[in-house]
Image (tube, rainbow, N blue to C red):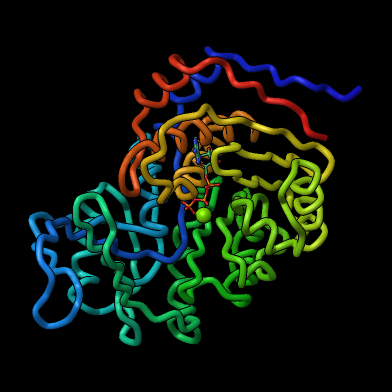
Length: 343
Ligand SMILES: Nc1ncnc2c1ncn2[C@@H]1O[C@H](COP(=O)(O)OP(=O)(O)OP(=O)(O)O)[C@@H](O)[C@H]1O
Ligand SMILES: [Mg+2]
């Protein structure tokens, strides 16, 4: 008989949070620098009809796969981060920020590409301009070999590998193919979790868990996702297309749909809250789910924790992270979630 309610257990979840610090994950992905320039815009430039921002404060954060790593660290988990940056000044800055964040990183410093940098200029909480410096050329040849070498060295003993794809050239058909082979060769093959980007869907076949948002699910499946029925259909189409083991479709304010398989699908709701900035919610979701799986939690419990954590970060400005106490407090203060089976 089909079980229709989920056995939520407050104490089990509280204990689970404490176990996260003993777990570790390996992350491979596109790493970038997020620069923020904050200031006032009180006058119009004499040079062109545009505002002049007088910068009062700057902030630089590690973004992309690096932000996934930050999310693992803030929950106390161990993390190994593999990726690449340029052989430039920003690359040095990126490396030092990663080190300061307590993240164990192996970065290949490329001669051929710059460090990916996104600069946001804000005045009075309002984003005025974003400036991107990046190359999205695929990584091939010796550079790809080097990354795979770093991965092979880091894999032994890891139970979960996150691939954080920001479509900056790191993830390719060849990389995913070799990554699957390397994982399969481990005495205990790690689970492979992928935060996907639409143009690369074809490369993710056979992975353990994909974490697309609703739009990515729709585009990956070529189907609409306006209603729960449509989400089920689109998710199932992704199973058919990619032969993945599980699927987690994030639904913004609607929470998430957790496909334990193409047949068993659960819905986790969110609690209405004031949203300041959804940036980085997806990074939090995959980081927490992965760390929780590495700590031995079942998929649905892992996703529940991730849903609480993402609910906290969307209430903060910038790509935020969550600490264990905040996660426990969030569970304590919110009503029990109504997790229901959709199929
Ligand atoms: N308005 C909201 N209220 C509460 N929680 C939210 C809200 N929006 C998003 N979340 C949480 O964040 C998770 C991820 O959100 P979303 O589906 O927007 O991810 P995303 O589009 O991948 O984000 P990103 O911009 O980081 O890539 C949701 O599953 C939910 O847990
Ligand atoms: Mg996302």
